[in-house]
Length: 315
Ligand SMILES: NC(=O)c1ccc[n+]([C@@H]2O[C@H](COP(=O)([O-])OP(=O)(O)OC[C@H]3O[C@@H](n4cnc5c(N)ncnc54)[C@H](O)[C@@H]3O)[C@@H](O)[C@H]2O)c1
Image (tube, rainbow, N blue to C red; front, side, top):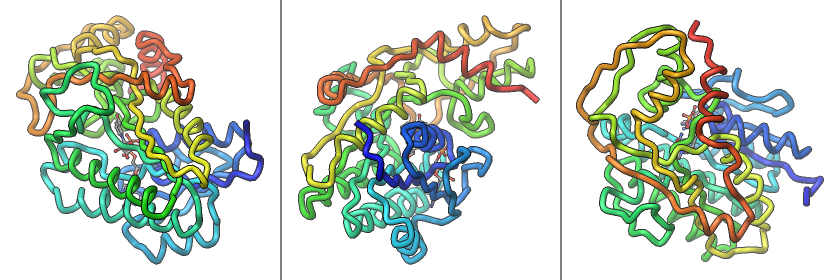
């Protein structure tokens, strides 16, 4: 049921997933404020109807001023240093944004009595030896500074729940893909492949291409945030951590074959070594989210890949 008075603050809403989350709340009739420093995001991603403030979440005073002016009833926290490779190169920056920044968001949300839904990661937490599909009870064994900082962020979210009664939900996302993912970064294989295939340029495959991920379409992820905000009422301080994935493993070569089938010309495949900090296999068990909030992925991989491919122009 939609609460007509919801004011949702979306950090990272000029980025890929955050922009879809902002759009999903606007579609519910909610008021949305996007906060993003544009270090990786693009103001063009902020959906029409949302307000936008360019602010660094590490800047406590600037963020406090925004919280004071907007007075959110819920916070979706997606702003992050979101690249595994970048976290290996500069772990101090990763720590600053993903731990100090998350602390600022969570602590200010507590001051305003606004429940927090935190975008964490499934793939980067469960490690190489996890049973697959991995349940939330799987021991966290991060392989990268990014996985470590997300785990620390989760700990602050949950601790502020138990210590201060802050309503909270942690969503551990699989590999999210869909329109608006940056095709020029180091991550986001579907976006990168789509753009290269559109241009007829060679694609780089790291490792042997048999490494797997749980690819989840961005609209399904955005729906999970809406359900989570509805569930994380301020009075509900229960500890709630959910995987958000399909439970299906797909390899990089599976993706490439499907996307290649949509492209007009066959492109060359260049193989390079797997990058440090990257897992070889990952797949999430989301049955807890299904039973608690009635969430299920609605988009089949083939359908989502086709929609994503057609959203890139290759220009
Ligand atoms: N893409 C995935 O497959 C995936 C998987 C698991 C978890 N996540 C998490 O989901 C969230 C969104 O990821 P994404 O793929 O949309 O990445 P993204 O880089 O597109 O979005 C992150 C946004 O955060 C902003 N940002 C970075 N540092 C900031 C700061 N200091 N202050 C304010 N804004 C800042 C960036 O400008 C960007 O717009 C992240 O928290 C990420 O860790 C993503």
